[in-house]
Structures are given as structure tokens and as C-alpha cells.
Image 1: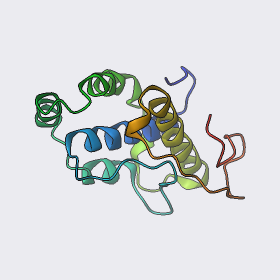
Image 2: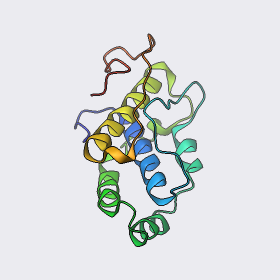
Image 3: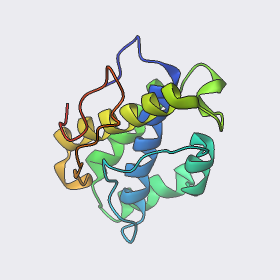
Image 4: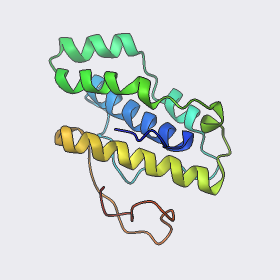
Length: 143
């Protein structure tokens, strides 16, 4: 669950992680979300979310009708409203170094939350990196 004081960039990362889990639930052929996926350089959070090609209604119906992690799907859908950043700047293409680090930290934090509740939905493989964001958990150490 996000903290009330999380930045918009961090919330955007959490939202992207949630959408990745939802994509995996709805489309079994899609790989599980992995914690070492990161936004880099000129990547855009909104382009990443759009690239998932989600149709929330269709994906929810497909997930529940297939009996594929229906409980998890409910939790994923319930999480979405709290993860939408209040500032549109969180979805801009050029997030900057700090914004990218915040986005990636939010992505990993959300996957860690899902991993705790539904271990079968997330692949947790992180390699230690000396470029971890100051103030964020050391890469390789789940929260």
C-alpha cells in the first residue's frame, strides 16, 4: 500500500506495476512482472502503460471467467484508484534522474506488496546495482 506522502513519480511506478500484474492475470501468455524491469532515459510512464494494451472491462471479465486468480484480480483492481498520481507531470516523458529513480522505486515497492500477498504473480529477481536511488531501498533487497 502506498504512503500518503509518496511522490507522484513513485505512485506512477506503483500504478505501472499494478497494470503489469493485471496484464499477467488477464493474458496467461504474458510473462510475469519482474522486479528488475526499469524505466530508463527517455522512457515514458504513460507510453509504457498504453503499450500494455489493457481493456480493463474485458481483462477483468476474462480473468474471472477463466478462474485465473480471481481473488488477486479483485485486489489489483481495488488498488488502482489510490495509485493514480494527482499530478500529470508524473507521466511525462522526461522524468529526470530523480523522477526515474522514484518511478522505479515505486514499481519495485508495489511488486513487493503483491509478492507478499500473491507470491505466484511476481518474479523477484534483482541484481545489486551501485546506481540505486539514494534514499530508496538497496536494489536486491526487497522491502
